[in-house]
Each structure stands twice: as C-alpha cells, then as structure tokens.
Amino acid sequence: MKVLVPVKRVIDYNVKVRVKADGTGVDLANVKMSMNPFDEIAVEEAIRLKEAGKAEEVVAVSIGVKQAQETLRTALAMGADRAILVVAADDVHQDIEPLAVAKILKGIIDEEQPGLVLAGKQAIDNDMNATGQMLSALLGWSQATFASKVEIEGDSANVTREVDGGLQTIKVKMPAIVTVDLRLNEPRYASLPNIMKAKKKPLDEKTPADYGVDVAPRLEIVKTEEPAARKAGVMVGSVEELIAKLKDEAGVL
Image (cartoon, rainbow, N blue to C red; front, side):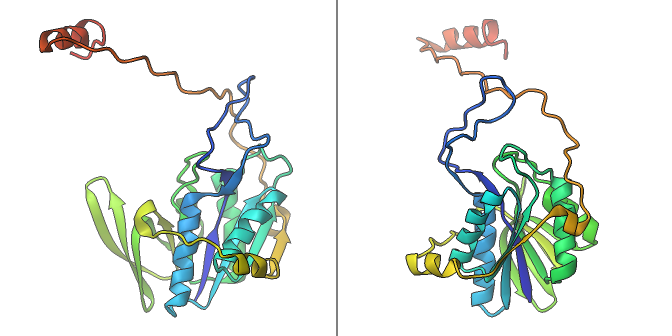
C-alpha cells in the first residue's frame, strides 16, 4: 500500500504572529517557517505504518511556494520515500484555499493511486479544517477525521476519533482519507545522517496547470487584526463584592 501525506509550510508554532501595520495580513518577513504540526504527526504515522509492514511507500506532497521544498525535505528526512511539490504561488503571503488544494490532491491521487491519505486535521495558520473533507467528497472515498489512533486491517481501517463527548471508534473501507489529531503519536526528530540522505531523495516539481486546477482565490481578506488585549484582573475582598462586580460591571449575572 502507498500512503500519501500532504504537508503545509506555516509559521513555526513557537513564533509569535505579528499583524501587518496596514491590516492586510500577517507579517511573514524574516519569520521562521516549519511544517504544520498536525502534518508532522501524519508523516510520523505514515512512516510507522511502513515500519510495521502495512505500507510500502510514503509520498509527501506540498502545495504552495517554492520554499516549501524545505518542508518536504524535512518529511523526507523523517523517513518519507519521495516528495511532490506543486508550485502554486510566488508570494509567500498567498494562501492556497482548501478547495483548490483538494482538487490538486485529487489529481495527484489519480496518478499515484495510494491506498491511504494521511493529513493533518487543520493548518495552524488558517485553521480551516476543510481540505480532508473536501478531498473525500471529490474522490468519493471513506473519511475519518480527528484521528487519535489508526489500525489497518486488510482492506479497512479502524480509526479512533476525538469527538466532543469523548472517543468514537469507526471502521472505514480503504482507500480512505484520515485526518489526524494531536494525540495520535509523537513525531520523531530527523537525524543528521537522514537529513543528508533526504537531499538525494526524489522531489518532483509540478504546477496546478498540470492538474487543470485554477488556484485564483475565491475569498477576499478584508482586514486582519490582533485580538483585543485582556484587561488586568482585580482583587475582591469578599463574595458579596465579587457578585456585585459580576452583576454591575461584567454584566454576566
């Protein structure tokens, strides 16, 4: 079985995001970028499936700017076998929308014919949580979202999902789309020898036109602004004073 893993280049999760002074978006100048954490978990799970003998090949895919090569090299250093980069934008500030990403991924899947697609449940930059579901609809494949455990059994997969009420286990028929959650695994660090080996692994470059997809944005960002700063807390001397403040100042009672 071949496993396809889409990965996205995003602002590193340790970096404090800054909004541009004119409110047109997020400032990406001289900002550290890295692989989306949920996608990193998906790569790790795909590699574990290969190590367990459940998969023969792991293919990483990224759609975006040319600099996403670095993200794919990280996936290759972790253990992916080869990578595909679809250069869909020249400007790092242009975010390819989920529907366009899903359409491109469908084109790649039609060519590669994987048995499983493992993807992060969402990207930490736009929090869309839509690409996996759209891809499932376009392909007509089974889907399992928010996965915290994945077990492959023959031509089906048992997936434990994180839902509002706790955990839900479902069985889906392969091929399938599975989007992963934080508690699925702990991604490995790429060793220096593997980082060096990754430079020699195949990385193909494509364009959206190769798959007949138009990536022109359908959404317009009107304004971007930082959340309002939280007001400082106050100390109260008694329960009566607390109730009075909640009623008269906060208006929650």
